Length: 308
Image (cartoon, rainbow, N blue to C red):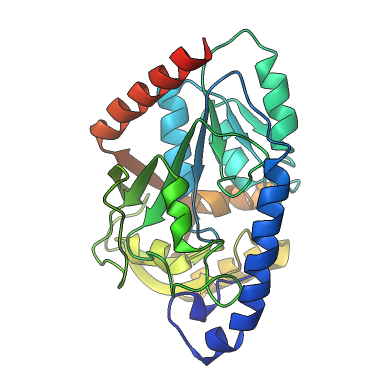
């Protein structure tokens, strides 16, 4: 579904949904503690990159950079598997296209298989911060500075998967810098905070006319970062599965406006094969400050020495 407007700004709808958020909070905590009783402990260090918001913060490029840095396998659920993504999900397809070893499906089952290997290389887990059935050695929560905590409410009246206090379970916080910082976005002082920057690398020039489209958590982030001349834009629901008719409509829109189509890499891997020849994507380059990698290596060494 598309990200509801009230996720970012409180509205009457958000307040009306608060009773349901209370029920959500009760059951999510109950499930958390039940799963905790059957926690799986990995021999290899597990580094979890998660968030306390429901998607759209830009976590996958972070996972890609860190997995490359460590030459580590990635474990992920593989959301919205389709034939276009090789039945592994768009995020997994993105990561595997970079040569990373990606394991999709039940996380615990994949971790058991990886622990049968002789390797001592850490395992990177994409998402799962709220999944207490797996013990994480290092947990890193990712935030987008322009989104912050959204409207500050829990699902479904807001974007939070859990209360803000959940960040205190993290070993570190990684914030993606943005020109505009969300209101009421605060960070704890007793947890290390590191920063990253994103840059959209468009295949088109600034003067080129572009019809931009995206089916991600917060499409406006993509639209705002493109330097080309956007004449039309189309937003679809997160992880949207494009049909041939969708693509034909977009191609017609571009032709009618004497423009080229441009989308995100995550959207591009979900396109039908024939459409990939007609449409280009804007690559997202993420740069994490070097002090984060120094901190991460230290934490990995610390946990490895405890397990040896």
